[in-house]
Image (cartoon, helix red, strand yellow):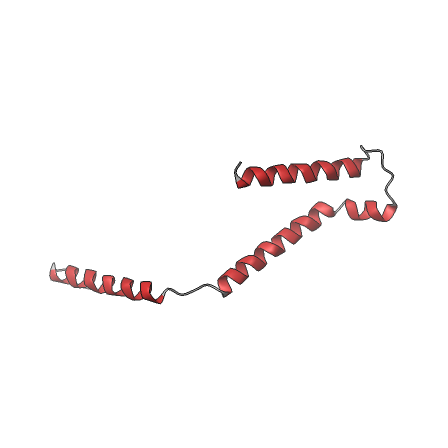
Length: 92
C-alpha cells in the first residue's frame, strides 16, 4: 500500500467519523459546546496541517547542510569545460 493510499484511507475514516458525529447518524446526543467545536473541526485540522508543513519546510531549510566538496568539484569541472571550449575557439 502506498503512502498516498494510507493517507486517503485515513482521511476517509476521519471524514466518515466526522460526518457521522455531525449528522447524528450514531444516535448520540452531543452537548452544544461539543457540536460547536465539531462543525469547524476539518478547517482546524487543515490549518494545523498547513502550519506543520510550513514549520517542517522552514526547519529543513534552516538545517540544510552545504556540500562544500561537491561545490569545489563542480567549480573545477566548470573551469575544465571553459578551458576546453576556449581551446575549441569559443570566447566567453
